[in-house]
Image (cartoon, rainbow, N blue to C red; front, side, top):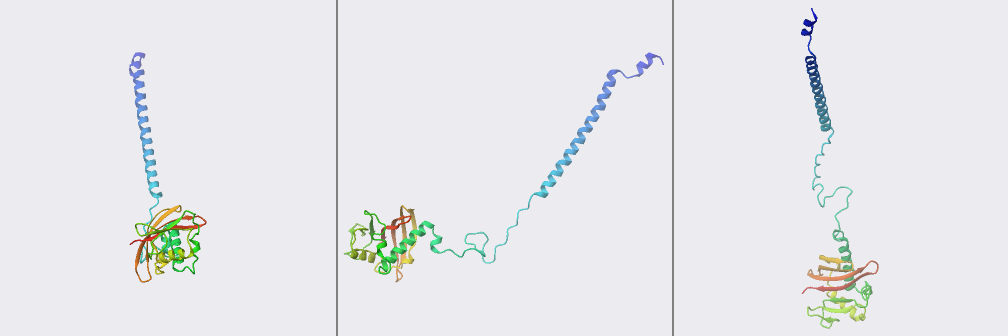
Length: 227
């Protein structure tokens, strides 16, 4: 075979390059196919592993017989029993109520509880008490609403006795029965609307105002009953 015939049979440079490009394209396609398969397998394995490691939320436990679980007032072994009246109140309001109970104790039994705790007690010279008189000759400056006002630091023993007699409604009020209806203010100045029961079962409503020293006790500035 002569040289011219051999040249015609052999592929040209352009044909050889095109053939190499086609072979390279197939290899590239195979490479990306394998890469896609690997990514798909990796993604699937990751999702499967994640679904197995997510914790299952705990199922709600049944409430104990005779009560509800987790609700207000629920009790279980080791918990404190039902709260007392003072504990159920706000701590500060409960402290004010205790002072009023002590005040009424002094009013109902002045020989047992020292009235000097209140008159003058911790009062400043300008402090006064507004109360509801029981008798026409009870001491104090009268107001249009029927209340009277006396000075904490300027009362005789007989005046103190008359004021306490009126506050206790002649000793008929039960001191521990006093119950706050609503409260407002701070220790620097507070108001409590209350209800209280007498020994014969009557319910009285009233208002108490005062302020409380951190260490020196409480000063009662008002203890009046509604008409």
